[in-house]
Amino acid sequence: MALTTLRKFLTVDKPQPPDLIRFLQILLQGIATYAVESDPIQLKLFRIEMSNISDSLTEPLGKDQMLAAIKGAIQSVENYNGRTAKLEMANKKELRTVLTMMTDTISFLGASSKTDVERLQMIEKSIDQASVLPSGVARIGRHRRRP
Image (tube, rainbow, N blue to C red; front, side, top):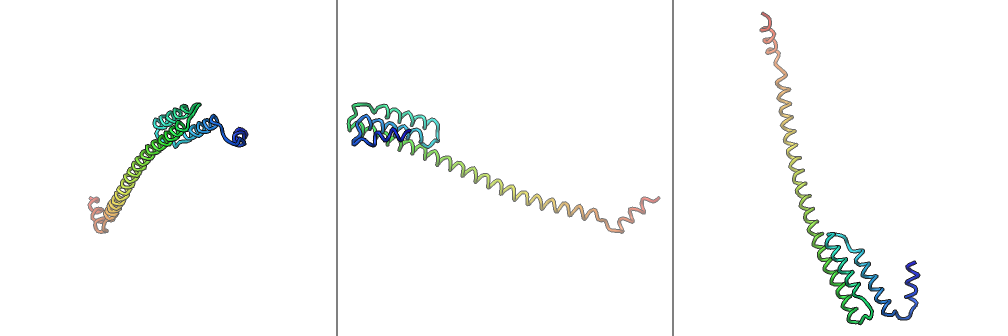
């Protein structure tokens, strides 16, 4: 259905000022709607800013007003994208730090586990050696039990 509406505008030799205003408003609305979502507060402010620019496009609209609105929209997009990029970089850095700490912790625990396993194996060998008594010691123990 949207194509039918656009065909009406495409068949006209030269778009009229109200058509241009509507095109710009649809474009600004699309930019605001499909902006990358990051910080909800920043996104809301960006959408309000784009809406204000869109609302400022009224008839009669001169070339200078249209140019100012377009420049304002471009500046808003640039500012929002810059803030979003900084936030994303901060999130990536934080994630990288957390992963590094986890890796260090797992490595430490792995090394500790290896040491603990080696100690337990030594204790097990000591117990095995202690449980095997020489045969002479066993006889002495039996002789003593007989009165």
